[in-house]
Length: 401
Image (cartoon, rainbow, N blue to C red; front, side, top):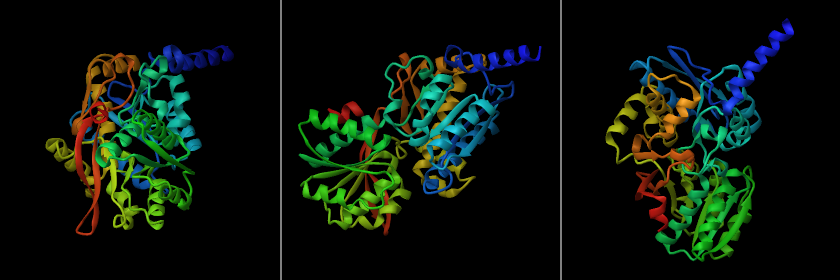
């Protein structure tokens, strides 16, 4: 009898997590609560990214809960620190899904963890709302089965790579484009888009590969200078991109540099402030803060309750949007049963309009993230580095055309 009971429990658990890609599951849901979670680097070298991201998510959920929640349910948020480590990220993600039994992962954070967990989560089918990365594997123009639970918002790196080349040509008339890229999912994804657009535009690429944990990138910097490039693209996340920028300055580079939207924050500029007198630095951006005064005021009011310093933090903006994306799905489900299948269908039912002018369309199982970006330039304001707008948000198609 005990063996039969154990088999029945195991069968039920497997069915909840796997049947129909997990689409019938409603774990983490009660009449008055829905549980969500994520892992993020909130200690170590990337705590300056993960900490504000987590805090802004908490601020948004608190605001919603204080207003009565959604359909009578409060949102409970569980967060673990994975230290930007893939193995820890996988283990903690499994803990969230199997032990904490969260309804959804919200703000699935960081290239290492996202890459390490994707196959597992596709197999489970649990909703993953917003990724704090843009790795190529998230690009699904026709998601099937458990992939339908994936809801990227940020631009995918491949698409941004194409935009970087388009900006290099449109803004600087570049004929020879240098690329320093990390040998990881982020760097390779950006490089893929860079190569596609450079080939179609008949531009010459000068490429230099670096390890994401390299502390000396002087050889790569020298390749850019000896290659006679007109623009240098840094296809890398925060830390390696800052190492590359400093190496370029030490080797005497004077050409403009374009980096990814993941670095478009004042805290990243703090890592490279000494190079701004040597050359100009530009970045993409996918959030229109200046064009959304009502959204901005609500955001500042709520995040300042946690820490006033979050008011101008790009990573906190991202966390706010991650939480807003998930809540939009809840509101669409409304008083209907809150199951994975109903949530996924609700997110696909119409374009999702988010704070700060962000729009994402998941119709017809399309999972490609937002398709609009702006162009920023690093400047010094009273000696303090900051980003200023060069071009407003435009669709990727408009930029490339």
